[in-house]
Image (cartoon, rainbow, N blue to C red; front, side, top):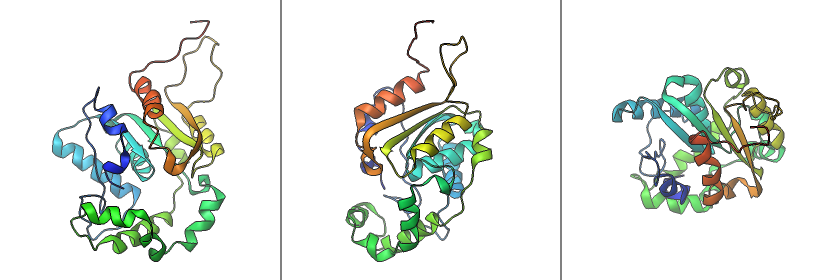
Amino acid sequence: MNIPSMGAIIPKLAETHTVYALEFQGHGRTTDIDRPITYPNLADDVAAFMDAVGLEKADVFGYSMGAGAGLRLAIDYPEKVDQLVAASVAYDVEGWQPAFREFIPQMTVEMVLDMPFAEDYRELAADPDGFPALVEKLIALEHEPMAWGEEVKALKTPVLIIAGDADVSTLEHNVAMFRLLGGGVMGDMGEPLPASRLAVMPATSHTAVIGQTDLLHGFIEPFLNGETPKGMFE
């Protein structure tokens, strides 16, 4: 992944926000280093970036691996995250679709080299021949243990979960995460709605999430601004 592959949502958000777009270790224009790619490592990098540019706190938007890094950032550096938008995320490996979990042991560097990512990588990378080594690390990332349920439950950071209805994470897992964050209660009972939110995009696979700019923006902007639809009893 790289900044251009995030599509039009970045310039759309930049119309009303100051946006810092990051390319992770080994991705886009960022060189790789002698270190595994893990979600805690990526969160550490984002925290270090924020320190380097003088950002004490920010709203964070991440998609796919970026959403996992954003979630880990909110867990490990809660003082740095005002609100988190996590699109296509899981907090536990059991939350991935069975088809994806069955696919992980079959992943090889060779099969990824035949995907469009390989050519995109060469266009931006400081080391155009570094893609196979990066893929090895990304496959290793899929084998990393991940069970953050208790840490998610302890979060005070408001989170907007965005998922496609045919995403890599199951619908049940997205609902479970929403409930861990205090969501899933009935409104119209005189109590304020939870700070966290859940949005499901219809007819949407994992790779189709990021291309739906207007729908994404329609979810993200009201969340960042603290806007909620008004009900009959308000």
